[in-house]
Image (cartoon, rainbow, N blue to C red):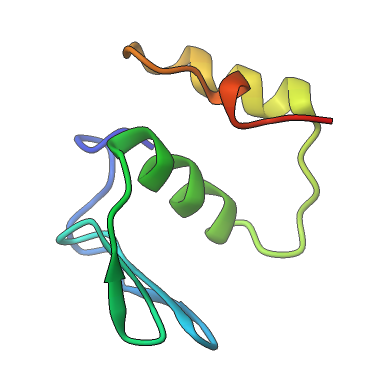
Length: 79
């Protein structure tokens, strides 16, 4: 979701060594903050909110069409 679409009441997501905090838009790996672009954070958060779900490239590209920005999800999806 876009920064404005992520509810601040959404709890942090943790997967072992990975933690995603949507309230302050911080990602930590092994308790160390990782610098991500806004679009990278949004895509990671979207995928993390749907564990065990396989997305097709087309579904992720449809996800992208909801948001306008300078970068494209397709730039990160390679097969």
